[in-house]
Image 1 (tube, rainbow, N blue to C red):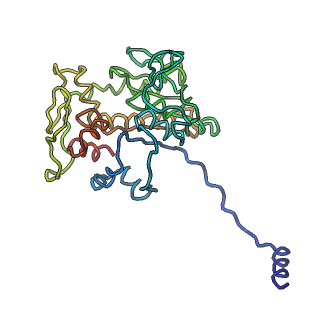
Image 2: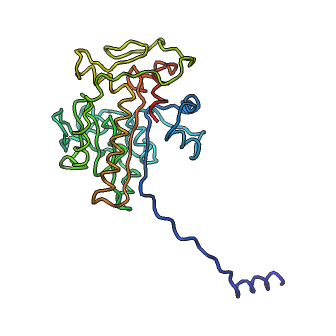
Image 3: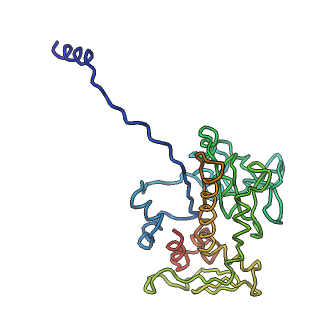
Length: 324
């Protein structure tokens, strides 16, 4: 009875609860994907980090017991899984390419025969979109429910497309021949002015002649010339690596060297920062999302090859400590 009376008294004199005002939504949401960055790389390389990744490890939530419960974790399937929070059996993208029974031929994961890409400079034109992706991405939800402006940048088309999903204002990637940047009419039917402005002012060829030196102490325990390394034409297994091309000019060999160096990561970082500033000072003063892929590169064929030939390479370690 006493408990009932106390409950009745509390009901008759409810306590005044002061609720904190709702916090403002974040102005910027960032998805950063480092292709082929194994979990143990955090422990191996975090001692050399001084910037963004160090802050994430020190101040953010670090999930140390996670896994991808499917085969195989190729780029397209992996980015689709990250962006949607679902597995390939649900989102529908399980490889980089597969046999299309309707078309009776092998199709690329983001190949879209219904569209023709929009180039920022003369380049081979194909058609790409996320039309094979069967569920919305995080950025799709931000765009449809929060009126967010979505930007996705990457060197690989499948990375930019699968992070962006089915819409966006500036979804941009480098052509497979690395001679120009591309978008799709699914995202923009004409070149985006802010993107074109950055690309015109920052040609990749400006990195010609630069040298990739070791970013780690000379006493670092891993060998500089390791078994299994496959440097591009013009490089040896050992540092330094000069972006000089095959004919002392920005040719196809130069672009292959550039793609495998931290200079490519730095370029994507500057690209993203420029778009943040441009869109922030533009008429687009609304919440928007940006999905950026930063690829660690090694002198084989990006970290994809680095993981296959062995991670005890100074190039991989140097890239991992110079990129953040």
